Amino acid sequence: MFRSIRTNWFANIRGDLLAGIVVALALIPEAIAFSIIAGVDPKVGLYASFCISVVVAFVGGRAGMISAATGAMALLMVTLVKEHGLEYLLAATLLTGVLQIIAGYLKLGALMRFVSRSVVTGFVNALAILIFMAQLPELTNVTWHVYAMTAAGLGIIYLFPLIPFIGRIVPSPLICIVALTGVAMYLNLDIRTVGDMGQLPDTLPVFLWPEVPLNLETLTIILPYSVALTVVGLLESMMTATIVDDLTDTPSDKNRECKGQGVANIGAGLMGGMAGCAMIGQSIINIKSGGRTRLSTLSAGVFLLLMVLVLDQWLVQIPMAALVAVMIMVAIGTFSWGSIKNLKEHPLSTNIVMVVTVVIVVATHNLAFGVLAGVLLAALFFANKVGHFMLVNSGYDEESDTRTYNVVGQVFFSSSEKFMDSFDFKEAVENVVIDLSRAHFWDITAVAALDKAVIKFRREGAEVEIIGLNEASATIVDRFGVHDKPDAVERLMGH
Image 1: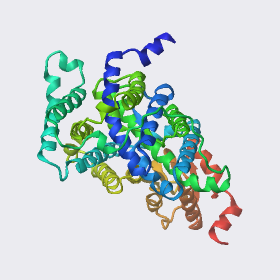
Image 2: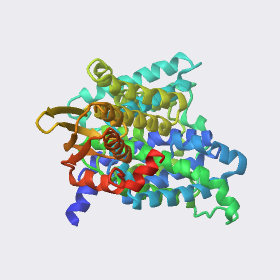
Image 3: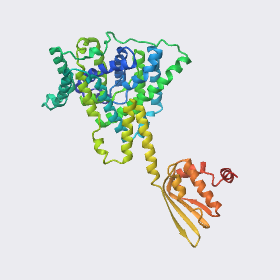
Image 4: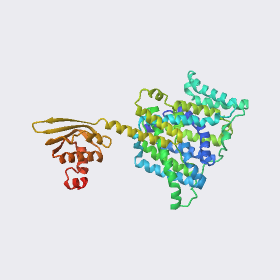
């Protein structure tokens, strides 16, 4: 037990605390911006980021991953807040948490195994593009000072780690933020700062129960939003967990993460915060800044609240250019540059899945739409590819007047037509043997194809024998097949 606690919490104290500071600094403007998107007070996003980070640190399934208020979730809240107000948003947040916990117990996190690598790559690339695009408003219609500060920030981020010893100890994004803030204050530059994003809260979050009627009408209002928030939140969290798994070469418990996100959102809703989920950008900042254990997630949330309440007079001075530089670094680091090279090497179907995922996510700004489209396309391409690996060979024995068909491969909805086309039903033979010892039947479409083949041969006067069915195929054929059930055959043929 003590070894587990040390591994999960105290194996990387210095790196986790420093990474937590960097993440907290990057969380503040984003939480405020997402609150503005959702149409609520900035403190709603800040309180949510604090609560979710702290709770997930204890109950989440992925160490080192950052969860907070996110833009993908905020976009889903706009209409609810506009039409019904903040209280209904808090109620929807609570229901979202409950639904996510249920999803965890139903083990829906295991569905991630159906997400192909090309979909994950498309998701990552689309998110990198969205992160970069989100910085463009800060770089549009501004003075040259902003461009100079952003360029200087990127220089610090990429060059500071080259300094011997100290470059490996202190995260370069933290140096970037501190240095550019000092320069901006010393030169008294007239550029946009964190303080221009909105007013920071000056009190601790307090327990709040949403002041909404507990009746069916309220449920009908918030349920559609909660379902959407649940799906997008879990999808983004599972995808982020998969990416952090790859970055750290460590496993995560996806079902525990579902439950943890649910508990965290319930906590956020009860503290006056909006629903949130894992953040790939902040998670990558955390990992690249040295964060590895649950302590980094906890410290990000704690430092966020401490900075907002105690260091607010300094925080408001941080130039947005510094944070833009950090987020551009995240976008560059997030994008899978190797995927561009792989366009020449990977199969066309893989490239199409990746590109479609990117295009739909960027066009709709909805991660769920892109990932679902990618998963569906990948499934269709896979089914089509496997369908081509089914073939039927035949041999004729003159002495017994027997035609033997040897079926090899997978027979299912995609290959059933090819299966039927492989038989010569007009051939005048006395006996037909269909050898299925090297085939597997997967669904009722395959069973129906076998039924039709047997019945057509029998109508031409041949005796048909099926041999070699494996146990699994025999089970589905016995249950759904009709070629050995005279009454069912008559109904099937319309007699």
